[in-house]
Image (cartoon, rainbow, N blue to C red; front, side, top):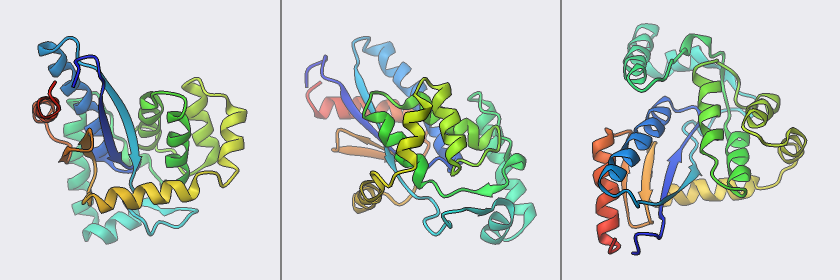
Length: 221
C-alpha cells in the first residue's frame, strides 16, 4: 500500500449511541497519534449506518421511560449517564441527557449522512448530529432539526429537505445496515479498516492507533 493511498476507515455507528460520539473523538485523537509517527498518513473516513434500537417507532417515543424499562430503573440509568458524562468530559463532550425527550428513529439521519458523503467528508455533519442529540437534546428524527444541522455545516437547506421528503436511499440504508451486521457487527461504534480488520467499541486512542498501524502494515504501508 503506497503511503499516498488513503486508508479507508469505515465507522459503523448510530447517532443515538452516546459511545459513538466518544468513538468519534477518540478516533480523531488516534489519527493524530498515527500522524505523529507517520506525517504522510492519509485516510478516508466513511460512516456506515447501524440501528441501535431497530424497533424504534418512526415517530419516536419518550426517551427516559424507554431507558428505565431497558436498564431496570431510574437509578441505574443515572449511573450509566454519569459514567458517560465523565468520559465525555475528558473529550470535550458535554452530555445533557436530561434534555432529551424523544427516543429518535435514526433512519432519516442515516440517509442524510449518506447523502452528504456523496459530496465528500461528512464528519462535520456527523458531529453536528451528535451534538444536536446529546448536548442540545434535539429530536434527530425531525426533518427540520436535520435540515438545521445540515445548513450549519454548509449544505443547502432546500436540497436537504427535498431529499429527506423523498424515499430516496431508504432501501439502500437498510441494506447497508444489514450488510454491517453480516460482517459480525453487533454493537457500536465499530471501526473497520480497509475491510480487512476492525475494532469493536469506543476504545482508547492508543488502541485505535495501533489498529490503524496494523492495518497499514498488513496492506504493505
